[in-house]
Length: 309
Ligand code: ASP
Ligand code: CP
Image 1: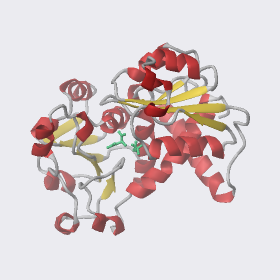
Image 2 (image 1 turned 45 degrees about the horizontal axis):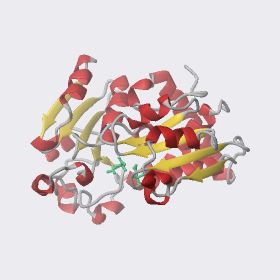
Image 3 (image 1 turned 60 degrees about the vertical axis):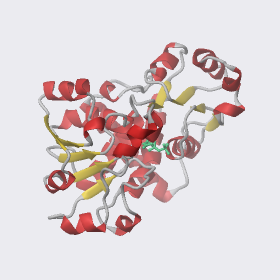
């Protein structure tokens, strides 16, 4: 595979099937290691900086945990309000500054394309931890790790992506990875929140079978897995539009009772109301296992970027 050493991670489309196989293999190795010991000191003396201009729980903390499990150090900008961003410093200047203190930057920012801008402003690797409604490639990698673990394969799967397909950066990145594995996809969303046309057209151009529908039950019954997403309230300029679509798709006990067979359920989290807490004890509910997998996958990415795998 093309080595990840010194590379930026910006977009789901940058990975080949071989890259994904290699990342999953290293993540699985680290998962096994962490069952035996607390960590592996591969990155002693290295530092990552986490710069989050938008809220996060899982991505920031799992990157920080991953780096610490590998023996490295973490510096964090904290909130936008507590940094010089509040004084009006530009993204490029902030990135230049942080590049003096860290070896890799993990960035979440509300503007689509910001991760690319940041990468252009520094010679050190930038990892896109979510750029507006654009991409969230490390989430997509932990999603495929989870799908592989839960279902035993990534090939020839039928997967329903449900919810806010317009603004959901996790689904935008995930479909890029799934397009490498001949999966069939159901896109289930309200009309207002359909997958952007250029993404759907690009996937179809690669020969993927895609069905767009508003019928979650029909899609679920035809699928091995449902990937549920939150309606991204923060992306709506007009909150009355959000009110029209909120609560459009909900998985609850009644829905599970009507399913013809067991199904695996993923969600990048956080959830609002789209998966009822009653569903958490369902054997196919894999979203808490999915978030744990984030640590192993992010350890793999960091070790590979530093050339240690
Ligand atoms: N945590 C994911 C993201 O930041 C999904 C979400 O927020 O709904 O994109
Ligand atoms: N899945 C995800 O990105 O979660 P956070 O927004 O909590 O980081």
